[in-house]
Image (cartoon, rainbow, N blue to C red; front, side, top):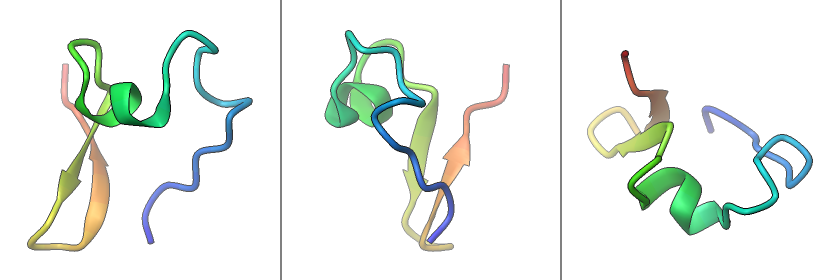
Length: 41
């Protein structure tokens, strides 16, 4: 399923929930396509 993010890939200050849903989230979960998608800058 999309991205496989290990703890070593994320900044240590971020939890997985913050990584996907926080103010600095880099990914969002695309429910329709059932995958995680990078935010576009």
